[in-house]
Amino acid sequence: MLSLMSVKFLWSQRGFTEWKRRGIIIIQQALLRVSCGSGGVGGAPASPADCEVTAEQAVNVWTQYFQQHGISEALLSSSYIIAHVLGKKTLQSVERRRLQERLTDKEREKVWALCSKRLTRMPVQYVIEEWDFRDLTLKMRPPVFIPRPETEELVSLVLKDLRSQWGMRTLRCLEVGCGSGAISLSLLHSVPQLKAVALDQSQEAVCLTEENAGRLGLLDRLKVYHLDIMKDADLTLRSCGPVDVIVSNPPYLFSQDMESLQEEILRFEDHTALDGGLDGMSIIRQILTLAPRLLTDEGRVYLEVDPRHPPLIKCLLEESMLGLQYLGSHSDFTNRLRYCILQKSR
Image (cartoon, rainbow, N blue to C red; front, side, top):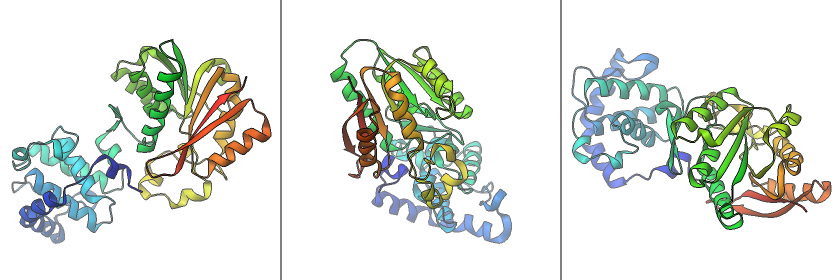
């Protein structure tokens, strides 16, 4: 499976080879300073204040240093960080001439400071404090869950149905577990007649969602609540319904799988946004229990789940008579079952 950053950025091998050749001398010089004891804070290479460094040379220095210290996606990490310092999303969007110019003292110091954070295994999204989700740029900070590319596909499924099933009438949507607000804000941005309610058990997530909504001019159509649907079920029912759509990327990892996650995730992201209990279904079951009481007639539930969950959810609905009909499952870009669509029964 392609990683989060790999999906967002495809690198030209020919370009990288050329950059590596041109920067080899400066790489050797920078790493020599480190080996001679002039390393920076936390073992990072000291900023080469006594020499000129171009953006492309800085990419090479940090790519090699990340590789030596076991940092995943070393090239992508250094590329995103240095592009960010240059005011761009990716190096591909930076003019070639600019890449070959030396960094200013301020730019060089910022590159070294941010790359030193990445050296601690902090995810790039937290290092540069932002990330793109569909056509939005969202602020990011730990420990709020970082949205993945799979969730962009979930939003696409919801948007397709909103446009075909409900037309232009005013709609209400509830997002359970909003994190940075990626799902709700993307839907609001795309559907002008939509109003949304979002909730999360994390106060940090609630604050970040409100901040992102404010920056995007969408706060007037969004209400955000600090609620835990496991503990605050009655308050959730009173505050959040009725809605036409419930959408959620809930915690769905099996508890036993948590230990196998990347160190970046384990060290920095909120575990409660990931761990779904013994079978990954703890939050999902609660959503299915509350959904019939929150939805309008024929309202729908859209879930992103583990590939092992769709048959379990279908069986649960058939056995429990919760008042939801299983409409179908969809696969993600890696061809794994990932999304479930349910509808309130008549």
